Length: 103
Image (cartoon, rainbow, N blue to C red; front, side, top):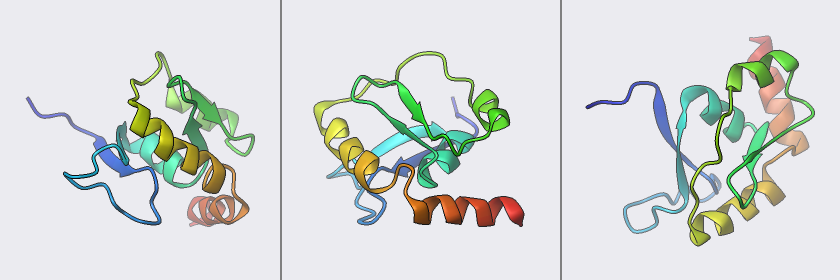
């Protein structure tokens, strides 16, 4: 069975190191969640619940339709710690997201 509309996104996108030997630097997300994650508008807590940026519009929040925590391994949590520190809500990522919305 083929899943439509999902992407496997790198958590630490600076290294782009999600490979068969480093699978925990990635998450299987829908295209909408992937775009928000890559732009620093959403990240995940260690318990798998999402944290939404204040910069994410109400419309964007409603579109994400989160229901249950995602399952994470200890190594996922390490990479997500990097994402929370370096990508989530960062000014450069928010400016990049705004530029995409304006296009």
